[in-house]
Amino acid sequence: MTNNKKFKICLTLAGAVSAGAYTAGVMDYLLETLELWEQAKNKNRMLGKKHPEYDFSVPMHDVELDVISGASAGGITASLALLNLIDAEYQPVNQDNPSGKNNRFYQSWVEMGDDERATTFEKLLDTSDLKELVKGDKPQALLNTAPIDLIADRAIRIENLKNYPAYVSHSLDLVLTTTNLDGINFKINFNGNDQSGSVITSHAAFFRYKLANKQFKKGIPNGEELYYVLDLNQPDHLNHLREATLSTASFPIALKPRDVSIPQKYIARYPKYIFGTTTGIQPILPSDSDYQYHAIDGGLINNEPFALALKIFREKSPIQFVKEQYAIIMVDPFPNKDHNSSKEVASTDVISVVKRMFKSLRNEVMFNRSGILDAINTKNNSKFLIEPVRKHRVDGVLTRAENDLATAPLSGFAGFIDKSFRKHDFELGRLNCQTFLRYHFTLPEETLIEKLNNLPTAKALNRFEICLENLVDKKCKHFPIIPDLRVLKASTNEADHANFGSDAHLDFPEYPSITEAYFYKKHQKNIRKRLELLTNRLVTNFWFSVANKLFIKNKLSKKIETVLLDKLKEAQLIK
Image 1 (cartoon, rainbow, N blue to C red):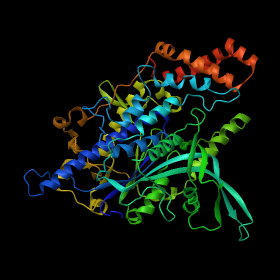
Image 2: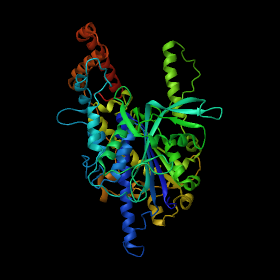
Image 3: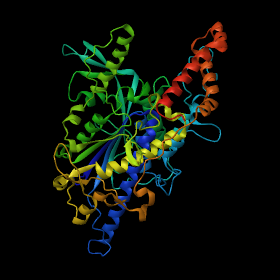
Image 4: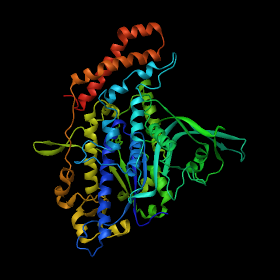
């Protein structure tokens, strides 16, 4: 049953390649803040209002995480968030845990596959996967996927489970988008019979999971609902989550596709979920007990699955949806800002048309998502975005930096090159989340009873309320939906350094850099070695292999190295 007293929160974690380190930092700070607040509320509940130590400055309303959707790198982080919420050993990254011990976010996104033997990038360039190919077989990817598998093996496991905390719904949905390379065929019946019809194919797929508890039994539920209930005490269920997580992040061409196998019973429910009560549509499925397909990155078709999250939330909580007693937060390291309205006539040569055609196709599938109208029609007080913002000091004044993320260059792949890039972005994510919770994730004071079912005390208002000039509602006094208890007085930016030290007011991390000499020393040999073997596997010709060894690989690798270095220099990541 839906708890109508709790303000619901839907999270959408967009795709970001290695900039998933930023999203991980955001999520780490968010979960830590929710836990600190819950502990303070629990203390108040135990003491009672008449106790002299009762803290009237602690807001006592309740929020609940209800849906977490993710694509690609965001899908990985969504799965990690689910596991961290039920892991009794989970520790946030803060001044007491700077190395990220017992923290999947940090270990998976900052440490990645680095160890004393090699860095993550060195492992991605390793040629062992190519050497293992049988003669005549083609490579599945440009990079070696083994280190990604190893990261997943370490992260998608749990030894000491606990129940969801009070700020998480017992019916929490984890939604991971993926792209079905094979596609699901749907027959549309014409002439009112099953014999005549046309076939349409859908390549947009998603996994939807809940965790087993007293309300939800493991497996596929009875009825027609489209979700799968995981029992993470079972190794096969953990492995299922692992494969789904890897499939949402299988960046096409760079990483190999994933083999997915799910019950036919689950797939058979797709038509009603996609097409509603429309009749005359049925999936065309093989007769096997499981449906199998090859999956690649969910971000290819649905990189920002906020509409899917809202569709699911609306089904679960229709009353709260109508009353807008909820908010959807999208964490997006690369929000789409391609709003070109130039009147210049675009080129129509063959190459330009091909480029524009693929861009048009991708834009169209990204736009035509089920439920997007729900997202558009919600008021501004229900939609929130966390995006990267970095500032640095120029003549003693904080000024917006030219580059925000160190992992951003090379279409988000730069983070694989060096750990310092990922560490910077993780720390920036924590800082940006701190700022977001304190000064942006708010509601106008006069809506608090309606939205939160609770009016904060005078002391809570004095502690957390800020004056926010909102261009839509023109209201000044705003109150945070999730109060950050590291704050003593938000309106004056006064933080509780006595109890939280440097975590009370995070500072912008130092922007990282490496030297060109370091890059060549660490990666030039590996790039050339992998490029030679990769091209030889793609072009199985003796004379090509000879020419490749003598000069082709050197020319190609030099061009690749130049592009990599130019992009890093452009982002000020090379000293």
